[in-house]
Length: 137
Image (cartoon, rainbow, N blue to C red):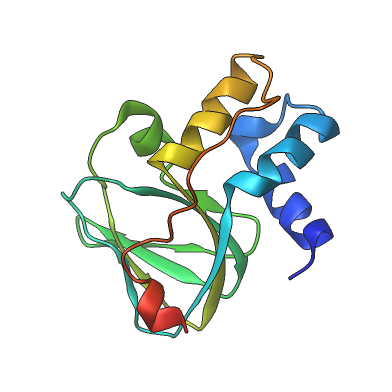
């Protein structure tokens, strides 16, 4: 996936709607791209939320209290739980093969910095793929 597709995926996040294009471009180094096969468990309800997920290709199904929601390209999940460092409210499964942009807690600090209008110059974060990286290879 190219940088333009990654940019478009981040630009679609409603929490980043007030950010400039320059600020969105600055966040591109703070996301990893991951591909998962259909049926992969992406998040478990009641477990600590460890990643912000942005759907680039495919569909995720989120189940909560017997209700299913579907998330497709341009949708994101986990923003509130990452911001608050809280639990996943829903169980999430890849309904089809998916391509996701993922930001762990260390990387998510860059999103907070941008929203707080703090400069990212020289700000770095270790890149860490999620626990299910081995399924994606």
